[in-house]
Image 1: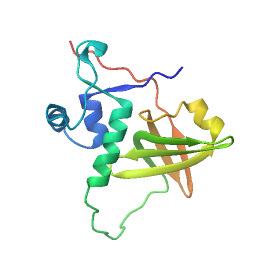
Image 2 (image 1 turned 45 degrees about the vertical axis):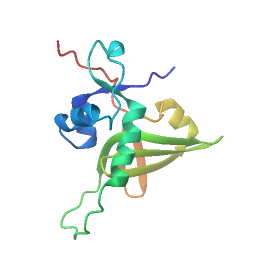
Image 3 (image 1 turned 60 degrees about the vertical axis):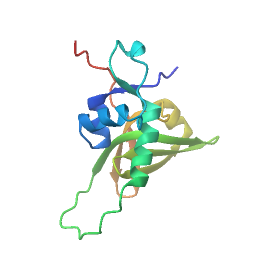
Image 4 (image 1 turned 120 degrees about the vertical axis):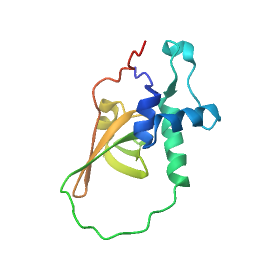
Length: 147
């Protein structure tokens, strides 16, 4: 059984590439829905699936940056983001990750997606090398106690 992760305001801000205050303003304005505080020891938290959908909306609304020439490159890139969509058939799975303004899509075996517990709202890392995208899942998520 996979429990849907939730994210503290700071974690959500880091994933969205904005400040903690911006996330709090979005919650206060009703733009981003916070989870029930009673379920999170009285702390403000955002459910993973809600945050994933919000990340997609932000990316869709973001202006497209002007193309600039590449002056440096890396053979390996890692994008930390939220799984926003998983489409499975009997053999394969398509996994979409929203990493800031970047949408990363990976095709993998269904077994791999199932073993990693990939579902919308799960935090994941897309490691990109050449034409392959490898999905990594960080250690267990623990909400920090700030009392």
